[in-house]
Image 1 (cartoon, rainbow, N blue to C red):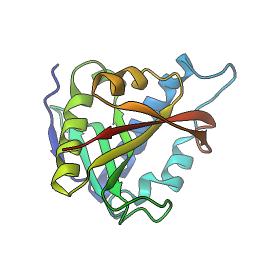
Image 2 (spheres, rainbow, N blue to C red):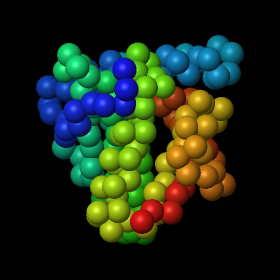
Image 3 (cartoon, rainbow, N blue to C red):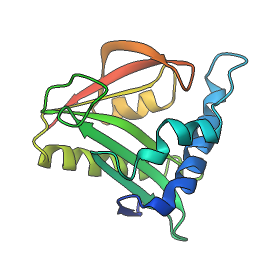
Image 4 (cartoon, one colour):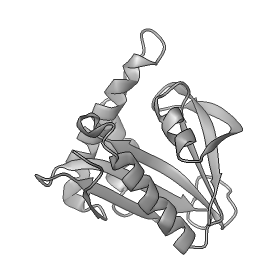
Amino acid sequence: MTGTAALRPPQEADVDALVELVVACNETYVDFAPAGWAPPSGEALREQWIGALPVEPGWTRVALGSGAEVDGLVHWVTGRQATWAVLPPDVAFVGALFVHPRRFRTGLGSLLLDAAEEAMVDAGCRRGELYTPLGAPAEAFYRARGWSRDGREGHHLLLALRIVGYAKPLG
């Protein structure tokens, strides 16, 4: 499989598939998370954020596989839309980028991130920011795509993992 996929905005009917996608991705965190760590439940994910994705402001796309299964998700908001943080209006925050483990290393993550970055530039954003778990394979992915650690660190409450910030100039 290559990084080809149909991208479209999420629909209300996608919520269960999105929960399954994020659960499958989070289960891979066991490979680098501290001993004894367990991923959050699908119900916790649904309650915290996935159920709100189709109506939340911002830009969201799901990637559909050849059988119309949800294989990926990318979501970002700008400072104008981020009610939970203070961001300049020309900064886009990538709040989610997930690729189903069955599509790891197929180029789908690059396809999703490229589409998101293009949309960020089209929206007038000059900088992108995101967080990823410390030690996650995603760190190498983001570095290879021109993103750099920017010194932000924190703790993701739902995941119960340390996270690190990455940023990239856009445009």
